[in-house]
Structure formats: C-alpha cells, structure tokens
Image (cartoon, rainbow, N blue to C red):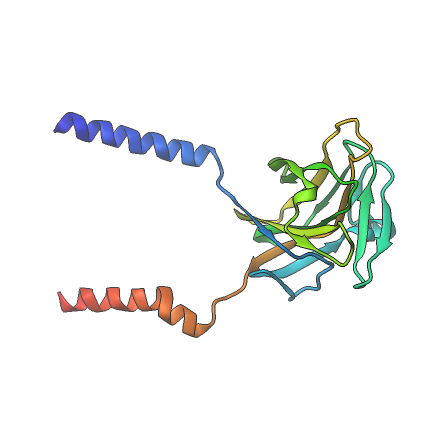
Length: 207
C-alpha cells in the first residue's frame, strides 16, 4: 500500500513539473474580424487596447518586413497585407492582460502563417483559407484568434508568413488587441459559481 502511495505521489510531482515547464494557453477562433475600438466586444471578449495594422504607416506602431500594402474595406476597416514568404508584422501592446487577439482576413492568395506571443509560436502553419467567418467578397474569409491563459502583463504579438516559395505566401491583418473576458451579468454569476459558493457556505454552517 505504501509503495503504491509513493508511486502516486511521484506521478503527481512529475505532472506538476511538466505543468510548470510548459505554459498553458488556450486558442479560440471567432468568426468575425474588423478594426475595433476600445470597449467593443469580439465574441465573448472586450477590447482593452487595439493597434490598427495600417497605423504602422503613420507612426511605427507595428514593426514590419517586406513591402506591405494597405486598403480600406466597404465596412470602413483598414487592412494591411504582405506579399512574400517570411514577412512579418509585430507590435507590443502596452495594456496588461492575460489574453491577446489577432484580427485577420484572407483572400484567394493567402496561405500559411505562424502566430507568436512573446516570441513563442502559439499556432504554426495555419491555413488562412480556413478562417471561420466570411465577408462580402466571393471567396474571402475573416477571423479573430484569441490567445488566452497568458501570464498577466504586456505582451508582444507577431504574425509571419511561412515561406513555401509560392506566390500565395501572403497574409492580411486588420490589427491586434489586448482583450479581457466580457464580465458575466450578476444573474448569470448567481446561477453559476455564485450559487455554488453560497451552497458550499450553507453546507459548512449546517455541519
């Protein structure tokens, strides 16, 4: 019995070491994307800070490579795109948060990209033609990638096209953001974790 307990204890310690060594984060795709103002929501997330990709042109908000171009969509959103493999766009968000977002778009020429947070690749070789939303163009998709579960702080985000020696080594982006979960309404809190907490307190008092 003692040997089994020791084995179980060793297993749990090993699991804790692995958990500490590999930072956990969650990736969530939302089927919409555009330029966002602070306070707007995208999916279940509130925008705390937004950096428009095209703003690099005016004030160096983004560090970029290659020869990016820009355009304005019918909904008023501005888009930045890159033509060649290996090109990237990078920026540091000043607002501290535990989640960041990439607002992106693809057309028929976009291919594979890597997404980075604080220098770590969180999603590799993503096919931009599989973005979950659509806009009013025949074959164009949009999406917002939220990376949550990060350490609380100011984060650097980066997108980079994968170099496949193809004319399709492009990517389009509206911008990037620091985001936070939309707070639950009081009623939802009461029916969820709040109610469970109250019941737990009552059980302790009745013992």
